[in-house]
Amino acid sequence: MIRAKRFEDARAQAGSNSELAWWVFMRISGVALVFLVLGHIYMTFLMASEKDTQVFDVVVNKLSQPVWKLYDLLILALALLHGVNGARYSIEDYIRNKPDRFWVKAVFYSVVALIFVFGALGLFIISPEMLRD
Amino acid sequence: MYRGREGQWAFVLHRLSGLAILAYLLLHVVSISLILFGEEAYNRLHHLYDLWPFRIGLILVTAGVLYHAFNGLRIAIMDFTGKGVAIQRQLWYGVMAITILGTLATIIVVMPRVVQGV
Image (cartoon, rainbow over all chains, first blue to last red; front, side, top):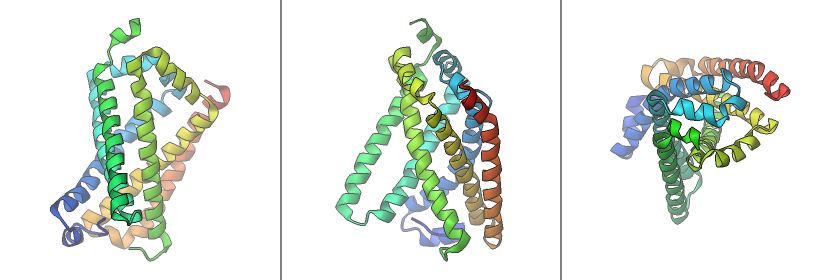
């Protein structure tokens, strides 16, 4: 993990190009996620009762619209990349044994990849036809 | 950067809130995606989430997101402006103020609904 206060320091510290690219990605995706996620929470939690948002029809109607599919897909992709990379920093900080670290990462990345596919599939497939089941 | 004091607290809270948000995100995606298996499967789990401990949990998640979002902006300001490092401590107190006020606002909006069970 790069422990730098400025971009110039980060560039000097980065062991590899990809490490510096992740460092930059964390800042850029982070700024985008501030707006995306706070907007999401405001709309689905503060403005609406979470008991209402749990009603199947409300969720299906909202996520049937392309604009919300795109909005949530953007959050899904950015937040998972940002979150998984953040968790990688923790794994590398706390698991000092190399074989252990490899297995923890392998299992963790696989689980997250599956959840991403599951979530993206859900967003693509949801349509008003589901209401008539 | 890690000489104890506020900077260290900022880092520890950032890491903890980040990991908590990731855990919630993964659970949230799986829960909502149950919609793929129809209304029955979806509702069975979400009726559980209607219980008050889960609804208060959402307030905690919101608090974590607020902290992580605004402290993340503090980090970006330190990294890219070159001026942020000098005022990082003041910025962190600002982050804490926004987090506490935002969480209080969330409690004021959400708690009456939880108490009334709507």
